[in-house]
Length: 237
Image 1 (spheres, one colour):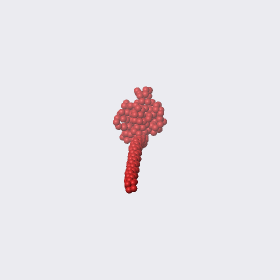
Image 2 (cartoon, helix red, strand yellow):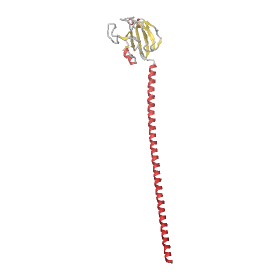
Image 3 (cartoon, rainbow, N blue to C red):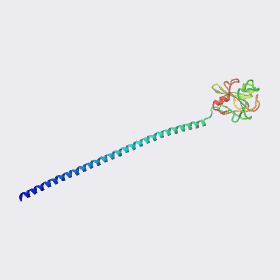
């Protein structure tokens, strides 16, 4: 009877020991599983954070690129605007600026031209004729000093009638002939576009007009093509 009790007690003890071991193993398994799950969660969180950082970096890079692009576009626009403003200013200034040379009369028709042949002249025509009515305002084609003025072609002969010669510098002179009235005197300084006389029909003239010459000296015989000269100065003759 005593041996059976002992034997049962021993088995019971063994069962309890096995149960304890199993429980311990189960607990270790549970703890290990929890640890693995925790590590997985940490890895997932770390990956998500890295993805967010990468996205943020990409967005920042894109924003910087857009800012650089916008800055370049603004600079280009500013340069174009400045160039347009400068061009407009130059155009405005040129419009306001007084022309260097002008037509000797405002409204006219070109008649006898430079170097034209004809019985009216000793050889060929020495200037350009502007057909205008007698009494038309005649102006200085360019600023300068009056060196000849009066009848007898102002010293160049009766064929010119009343005449004026203006010295402009750099070996350039202008002559105005067949005038009905001379309004300047020798030595007088005149400005571009200033009235100097009135057109007429004096001297060797077939009708009212202004005879205009560009010369390299103040005297007859040194004339050059006045229309070509004026056009080279920007005058639309």
